Image 1 (cartoon, rainbow, N blue to C red):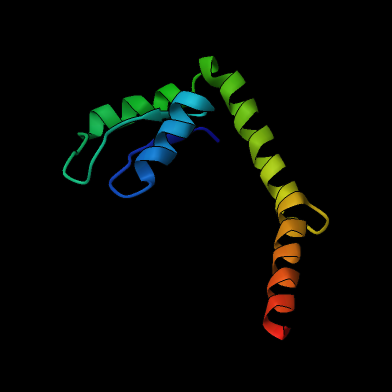
Image 2 (tube, rainbow, N blue to C red):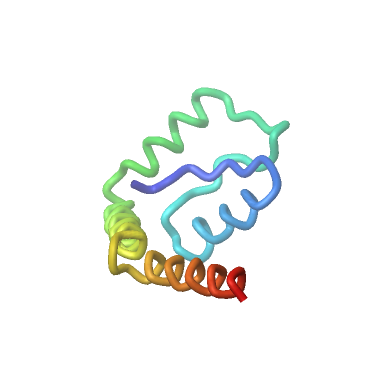
Length: 95
C-alpha cells in the first residue's frame, strides 16, 4: 500500500525522502512532531492515495514489498548476508 509520510524525528526524515522522492510510493503529509493536519486535510490525503491515479504507485509498492519479503526469507539476500555475518563474528570470537 502507498504510505502517508509524517516524519517526526531521527532517521524518519531520510526514510520519508526515500519513500516520497526516490521510490514514489508515499506522499508527505506533514513534517515534524509539532505539526498537525486537521481531519479534512488528512481525509483528502487518504482519498489521494486510494485514487485511480495511484494505481502504478500501488503496484510499485507491492513489488517493493514482495522484494523485501523475498530478501528476508530463507535463501534471500538479507537472510544469507545475516548468516554470513554471524559466521564471521563466530569465527572472530573463537580465534
